[in-house]
Length: 168
Image 1 (spheres, rainbow, N blue to C red):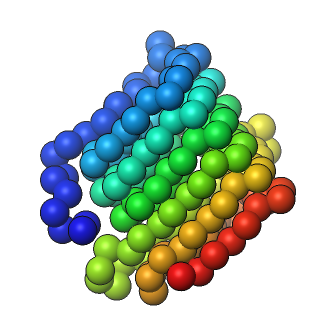
Image 2 (cartoon, helix red, strand yellow):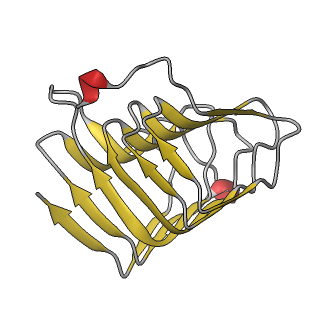
């Protein structure tokens, strides 16, 4: 359950300007508060994930708090049974997030906190788009899991291509 996951078990904190172009092959990210937190003022970009699996993230799978955190791509990855937001973009965050194939399974926190697959608190500019999901299977469990929250007047392009959605 959400309450049994420790808040102190952080994953990767990627701080620009130096980090760029990391690649992960068949990795597991299990029971972390946040799997990835991208911050700083430059880079923290071009991360690629191949066949990876994340399970039971507490707060978010990935938080984008850097305007240059771009081109984050997932190929055949599964992000499952998480209790917070999958992708959280702060007011200082970026985008160009792409996910090809794989599964996304979202659970709520057993309270009234709304959670999202894409929680976009900031405004992604045109060079930081799009957000693309292609061939992904989504499951939204419980009453407070949602697909997208966009809280900006600027346009953000989110595209779903050949995806399957389940509300359980």
